[in-house]
Amino acid sequence: MFVALLAFALWFSQRDSAKPAASRDDDDDLELTPEREPPSTVFEAADVGDVDALRAMLDERPERIGLRDESGWTPLHHACYRDHVAVIRLLLERGADANAVAVGECVPIHMAATEGGAEAVHVLADGGADLNIPDDTGVTALHYAALPGRLDVVEALIAHGVAVNMKDAKQETALDVARRLDDTEVAQAIEKAGGKSGAEVKMKDVLAALPDGPAKQQVPRAWHLELESEEMQAAMAKAREHLPRFLEHLAGNGEARAAVKFGVRGEGIVEYVWGEVLTAGSPLTVTVTTPPVAVPAPPDPCEVAHEDVVDWQLKLDEDRTAGGYSQRATFEAIRAEYGFLPADIEEDLSHLVDL
Image (cartoon, rainbow, N blue to C red; front, side, top):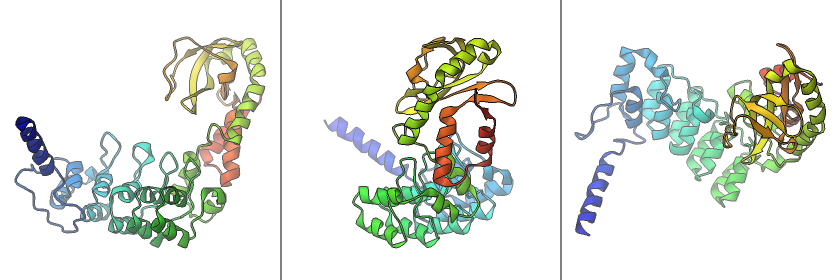
């Protein structure tokens, strides 16, 4: 028992010494502890809040400010996550992209809202951060701040005019999050700023008030129709309705078989797979060229039953794509919700032709 306690004490002491030397520190000079080696990369310098080391690295090679780690994080992401305000200021002064997008469509303001403080939010907002950018699930900085009940961060975001009624992929606003967690203070702050529940909000009204920018373009990409929603169910039904016609076309047009895109139900979401149809009929026999993302990779070739086909596209030539009924219905539902779609999505839809 003594040996176990001794080992635990040693582990705990080592863990403590590995903590960041400073947090919420606004001083330019950071005194390193003897146990810690000086940072060797801009990511390490931003992570521990070593302003002097980071400044020297950027003086030597200014392009380092845009470097990304394996998660796509820039030094600014790291500084925001650790709430090193002085480092955030330095990076923004040196031209860091305040809206740099990392894996999961995360931007620095998301890091600050989750782990930083109100001052970091103020500095980012003044440095050009778009406070309304959603991640790939539609979650915004206000959602992130409301989740752990960070009242100071919520108030800072509101002070800078954040759109309080943005909805995430579950069609929840930040007010819905606060109410679900019974956080009265955060809920009252959001309500006072005009916050409503997702059921009361139409995103096209919210986006109409937003200036053109990263958030306005990203929101339609981040908003996903739930598989069990009426819109998606209607889209799936329409796709299945036209599936026999699709199969008939495949059977009579061998050249079109080389690029078939179909959707399968799995893990509660719609997956898309490109493959070559070997036989038309029920079920389809397909040679998969790109396996599904969130479901186990099927054998090659695999069979896909009619009821599992919820979306399909068929490449007819370089300029025409046939089918896409579910995709068309889905994006039309999103357009109805938002009032617009990004230009590249509109362009994709313009190439869809009915068989």
